[in-house]
Image (cartoon, rainbow, N blue to C red; front, side, top):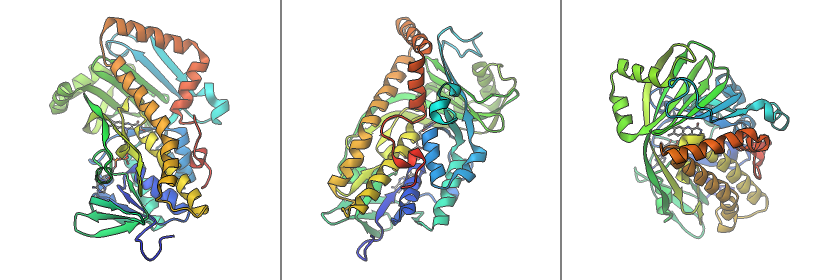
Length: 418
Ligand SMILES: Cc1cc2nc3c(=O)[nH]c(=O)nc-3n(C[C@H](O)[C@H](O)[C@H](O)COP(=O)(O)OP(=O)(O)OC[C@H]3O[C@@H](n4cnc5c(N)ncnc54)[C@H](O)[C@@H]3O)c2cc1C
């Protein structure tokens, strides 16, 4: 469709995990996407670039398989078989055993509906980025990098994007997938809502002495949640949330002091634990775009919704968004519609709005309810958790939500081609 007048069918600002997934989906369906990013792929793959690992819902993982990434990702994907959630002043391991209030999710309970899939997969972002970059380059998708989008203009017949070096590119549709500070969102006049949690996520990878058995642990502590997320090779990714001041002290601590804090927090239930690689930190906030679309613009990933990592849903939301947007655009093309028109883009916004807003609000409530040492709140949430734990359908609902298999699923999330 990219006529002689346009540089591409869809210009995607931001070649992060959401933007690259969208580009691959569109390319596979015969469209011509163009990716723009200030960071070249090689730099995105450096060990110091992104130390996070992501819990990926099994439905989102199916989407990557459908895009041909299965072979590259599977050796690095750790199945999450169980999730244990504990509400305690200190983690069970460090505080002399878990409190009686805990939730236990087990993949065996949903095996009939999930076709034997686990609750999700844990993948280091660097491996996902490597697989996506390899697939994008192999597909011959045009990538302008390093190149920074600084502004955009949206007109009746098309959109134009201006780069920092003065170049201008045009397409019927521009997707802002450049993360939280999205210049495309600003150029479209779309505001944001949200707040700072005054918390920082300290992220580190550790190697344990005893097998983790595919179990993910989440401890709710007054400073914020502490998650131990199983990785391949009997390692784990820690997401250690603390108030901003405490996190700064932790990051600045000498290695032996950090190790002492780590052992105190982690305990010895998995034997000795040793830090592997650098420690990373991420300030945490909620940021929701007021709208996901405007004429000739769609927002995707963190540019549309930046959420707290408490339930590991941020990237999953972005991947669901990529699947939904690709499906809407491909259908519109089949019907001969203008893919940048308001009527087409509204289908994407309507599809993703409800899910995104309810999930973001739910996670925000969780953060407020659990990052708190008020004794009444502690009692109430303990009662709530043990009630959910006793009711099998409630547990099943949460597991399917975590697996990303609820609501009207885009075709790619069902593992089907577009
Ligand atoms: C501690 C922590 C743990 C997390 N754990 C999980 C988890 O377990 N599961 C999960 O689903 N999510 C998790 N998340 C959330 C997840 O990491 C993010 O939602 C996800 O990385 C967002 O991807 P994105 O592609 O939308 O944006 P980004 O990763 O921010 O990518 C944006 C891209 O745009 C580029 N860019 C920036 N400016 C410009 C510009 N001007 N022009 C062009 N390009 C530009 C950037 O270089 C970058 O490549 C976690 C987040 C944190 C902080």
